[in-house]
Amino acid sequence: MLDAILSQTVNGLVLGFLFILISIGLSIVFGLLGIVNVAHGAFFALGAYFALTLQREFGWPAVFLAPLGVGLVGILVERVLVRRLYGKDPLMTLVLTFALSLFIEAVIRTTWGSNAQPLSPPEVFSGFIEYGPILTTTYRVAVLFITVSILLLLWAFLSFTPYGRILRAGSRDPQMVGMLGINLPLVLTGAFGVGCMLAGAAGVLAAPLWSVTPSMSAQAIMPAFVIVTIGGLGSYGGAVVAGLLVGLVTAMSTQFFPQAAGVAMYLLMAAILLVRPRGLFGEHWEHFS
Image (cartoon, rainbow, N blue to C red; front, side, top):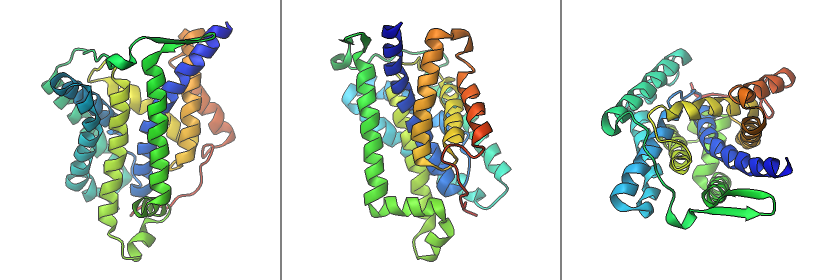
């Protein structure tokens, strides 16, 4: 029993940090742009398929370009579509991003097909790691360290760079950022691109763990919404805590209560919202209009 608990804890942390990468991007977009990006899971899937193509054509070193490619797609989408709806009825952005998610999935099916496609991890990360009672794959441990490194780099970027500080300030009060003479539309474009790039990075890392399919976006977007809701809308720290909770609860329920694995994270969300209706770190936020 203890062996299973410890092994599933490691698996839960890996899953949780993948969810955090997706959710942080969703939080950045919501916090600064004030919109709920329903297409966020589609960018996750796009990252996985970009990685699949780059790995087959150029090898694993080229896979690092996949998140950048997803970020560029996100920038294009913001400039062409999303920007037109700032200040409009929030329902319009929900409809737009939902339609966008369907469009991206259709493009994926047309380009790569509908069947699941395997993506093996790099040879250096093949095999297993056994440490006492803990048994897990080398790739899962690598994913854990890579996701933590990405999150630390993101924290440093938001905390110590001028653009990162603008993003944080814009999350609180976008109008004030504009009044200070900062090019707010450019900041919003960059924020949307960064959010999509994080989703793409999570898709790249998840590809060898999950089946690469057009519908894998649904496997990412629902946990992401749950995490953002539990952590508090727009809260980056809340997304980290909630992501770890959801990852651990999902892993443990899969191991010990498989019949409830599909609803475990929703039960967790309901329990937390009964006590904290705005989420663990939720507060009143100003939105762009």
